Length: 278
Image (cartoon, rainbow, N blue to C red):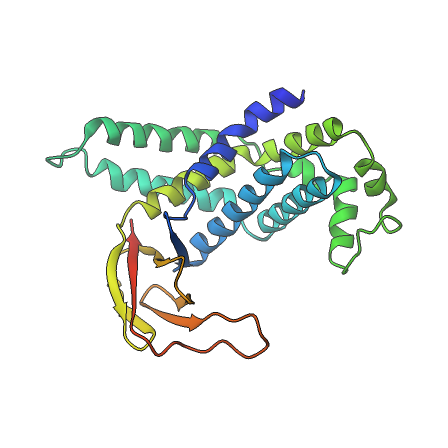
């Protein structure tokens, strides 16, 4: 059972691992420009975290994986995500189909992308009702989710059923976790593809932030989704981004772990920028 479950979940895990944002010797910062992409990025983060911990058999890794599952369920409960993802897949497919007659287009690559989009849409459409509805109705998971809102609320004496489950052999816990994660497989595959297409829609190009700040107005006629900034890993500052569909701002702050508030650097900062629109 465990091996079967692992194989079914591996496509999501491998895809998310392979499209890591980190550029060699650089740190990447991203700012979503609409609520849909913001939700997708949060789910990507949770899928990656779950994929990391589920492969390990320690009790604390099982706790971490289960926390990811509960957070994913919470996101799914706050929005009609299945409909949102299908709309986004259809939008990408429509945009790509317009390129079929364009000269210089790699038809093989275009066909592969269209097939992938169709496969992801089909996978979501085969799901009857809400995604992972079985997990939402699980008394065991619900009890853990309710106690998770309290600091330290999943302590041994608070949720004895959870304590019992954590004492089961690692193989049994891993089988359960993979089985639960598989409920999100179609969603994870679709979101991964959407985010990959979004990120690949623009290349990182050199830019300069004078006195540590950079602002740019975006063309409202273009569907900008995401801003990405790359900084050398050795830089003594980090990027703080804010913005929406019309403009964005990047401030570069000197990093410090002391209690003083981070301050904007006065230096001109060289960085790489991509404004992703697709």
